[in-house]
Amino acid sequence: LGYFIGLRELGGARRILETGQLSRDALNALLAEQDQARQEGRTPPPLETLIDRKGLLSRDILRRLLDRKTGVPSELATKIEQARSDPARKRGKFLLLEELGRGGMGTVHRAWQTDLGRIVALKVLILADEPDLVERFLREARLASRLRHSNIVAVYEFGESDGRAFFSMDLVEGTSCNQAVVPRPPVRRTLETTRTVARALQYAHAQGVLHRDIKPQNILIAKDGTPFLTDFGLARDVN
Image 1 (spheres, rainbow, N blue to C red):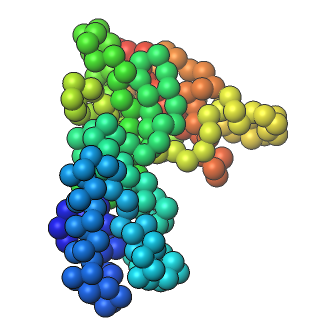
Image 2: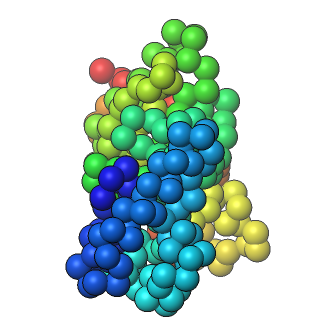
């Protein structure tokens, strides 16, 4: 499959070959076209775009081949390949797909983890040349990674790429609490959210972690209404 690594991981290129929709020679010709673009310093078009542009497969068949089994929409596959071809959007084994938020210490991105084939949230430190900020960033990752609670955003791992520290987290699809209060939610739902967050805080305190920055912006509300406590940037270890 030549240089086309992304769709091989997603299973799309293999299914194209297995189903006989395209010959190996035809697929390799498309991959060679991508490689030629890279050598010329251009962003190579995604394989899906090349197949569609040349009319080699109908869009309906192509989407079914890319979406089947993996559960990854073809639109996401396109974003992944675009990020893969841009060195500035690579952080170790993670590909930055889009920025979700920005704070005083770092930016949070929707990202693709290439080795496990999953979407995560990736927090990237903005200033890499300030030791105090790096230590604070690392402390946040360490403290949050100790917590395993159904209403605390899980932190997976810490890493560094090109001098930029980052750590990956579970991606909560939804909005922050300060955005969720417009229009004002029912009183019962507000009380339930408060109780749930308080229990998450109680759990964190039992693990020796003080959050110290509870505010609506640091409480995420998933699409199903479930609240999640996040951002342990000011947290302290009481031990």
